Image (tube, rainbow, N blue to C red; front, top):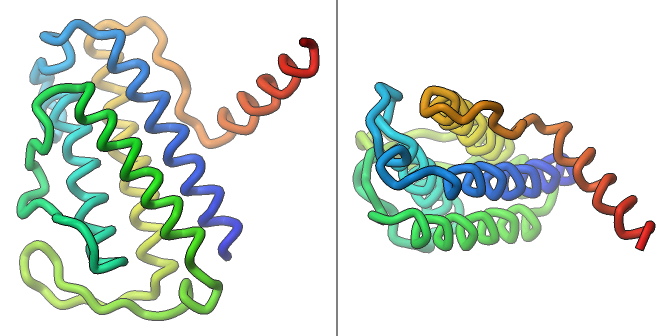
Length: 174
């Protein structure tokens, strides 16, 4: 199981970096425009993803300062948000790297943001973490289209190894 979660942590960071690259190409007014997405704008959606990752990482590790709200705006500007996203992605990757297969099978007790006690195997919770990211990145991808980006880059999982293979091939040609 661990190789799967390691790949998902790597994909998560790759897809987030790609998404932030597209977000940087937008004028600030477009980036912040409420287009009716669940968290309103691309800015709101990206902040939500960081907020929820911080909540989950606090549950997983006992470390960090999670926000009290799922729609918290943790950073008011894209550059600061992007730096925090990169740091959180490294933290997620390190957490997964530190887990053993036994850890992945153990149950974790936690309390939801609404105060409801829960208990699930770590593997199920990691699956949820990465699936949640994918879900909202899909929304963010739609927001990019609504904002007029003609063809946002693919965030598909298989695009990552294709890009890595092309990069290796390009390096070999040098």
